[in-house]
Image (cartoon, rainbow, N blue to C red; front, side, top):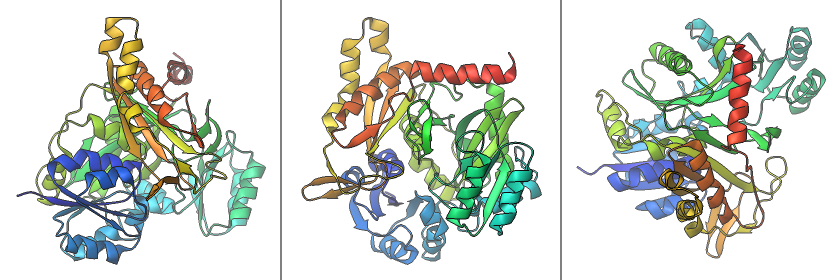
Length: 448
């Protein structure tokens, strides 16, 4: 039987999911924006707000979906998985209560303490902003202050890095969040491990490093993620195998405490001088990390979904021994004052031929052989009759693949020439210089 899969969401993450599924099923999609990459892969597309659970469930019934995949965290928080299940459609994603691992950071930290999940920082939660400010002053060391709810990856302020303690307190007073978490600041190198989870099984994917800061050299405000990279193995150049295993142990301890959890469990970790610590959990694929992971997944993603729905053991995952580098093109002014509604041109052929050009320019056969391919993933753009227009978020991403991070970065850098006027990129993601800085940082932390 051919499966009919409904994909919810219209970003770069969802374009990557659509690409991984389209050839194996009848794919339908719904989102608030008309993502041209998803539209081109889907049998049908419906404009629906990702938080309108009833409308999404109605569309699932209309297309007779046998499976669903929920991409964005906003849909999980709105109970879309619960609504689909009420209509008899299995959705690969956590129900609203389990999604609190991401949607409620106060719950996340209490859950870690109550269930002995390793890697938890010192923390306190507050309804009273002045009490939170007093804690910032009293804490012996730097802190991270964050609202308890969703902020699209841009709500955290870290003292000793982004802001002073006085600025952190001013931020809390200005924003007037209902609940906030103030926690110990970790110092180290961040990395992400995502895992497919269902029926008590945990199937981890290779580690990825995201780059949240807006500008080259890790400067500027936090964003939803300007780009990311992965290596041709499951660890990153600054990691040891034991670091990866420690991160997977954390994910498995979460699932042991939440045996009904299903979907993707994303651990954002900090590799510190004292080992692996948990920055946060997300209850879905990362964006951009999905664009690093899914293109190198050799096990059909549909097989994972079917096994999850049918209560079977999840298949072991196979990944190509390929490095990836993802770089985002974003509107001018992003993230603080992005220019929305600007018409943009994207040269798709330029992306797909990037690897060919890089290989032609390589000086030796070995370099040419190590070059993979270039991929384009549309994100927060709107397709209209006369072309593509920007929103206030990231516009599109390119992903380079190769035998090494350097080869993948060369392809991604060339592919970014597809970005026309009015877009900005972080060129340094995946470069040898930036990767070496990560290695040197961890070496210094460990005192090697």
